[in-house]
Image (cartoon, rainbow, N blue to C red; front, side, top):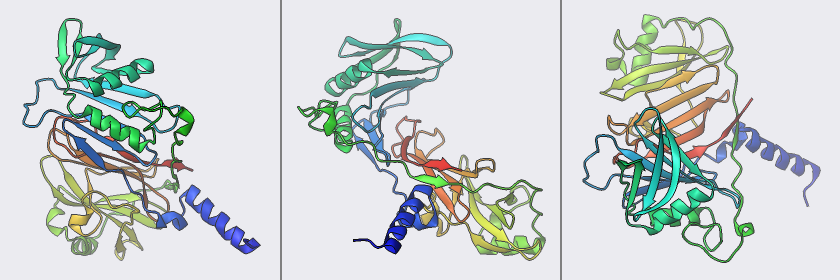
Length: 352
């Protein structure tokens, strides 16, 4: 039996989790991992929304105009299947999708993008899982031949992850159980963001502060005249400083530091995160890549390409909650095999 004080504690803890307060930080975000089956990779987020994406066959050359195809489904008994295609293009075109020489679905593509929903999408996904070859055409023009090797295994993984195996809602692992046997989607965590106050830009760093900041972050050699720290107002007493700390052909690294105190005598600390950005382990402190800051959303974005084509890599998006940056979205693509669409592995709701 819970006494009144215990009940208040339980209620406070539940409220903290729902609003994203520091009490909820014991449960750090755990983005989903990707699985690869031959020429398909699949990942699911914390709400068990899963997405399978086609890859180029191992050792295959990148086509002049590559075509990707993906299969998406949210969790829950009523969630419908979606199939999308993506290819560089302009204008509108009627496309057909055939498996083993049999037309299964059609759609209207706009600027190379098309999405198929409902029963037609389910039929197409099932045919892809069972088939051996596929063609996507716009009239008589061949747009692409996505490999189906591994698609069945990827969709079986999706069925298992969403608790559909053995039910009539499964795409591959079908059974006799009805939709009520499928569990609903988990609730997305809610993160309460702190508003960034309006006001003048933070005062520029003094020379002594620049020297101290370079030593603190280990980025002295990268803080050149053409790559100076970016200062952003974070609160009435705190300044977010994005310190340049290395660059390459397509990835530009920054160390996030929070400064407090009066200009000329500011103190520094590394910004806190509930989930470390992608390159932090290697650096030993928070390290953002190709960073972007949106004060109107209290949002910090970081993404790192695995190579210049952008067909592999990962991204994270955070919001400032007044104490630390909290993960609200993560995407990943571990295979550098022609898939420039990165799979969502974590989502959270932002509340005011």
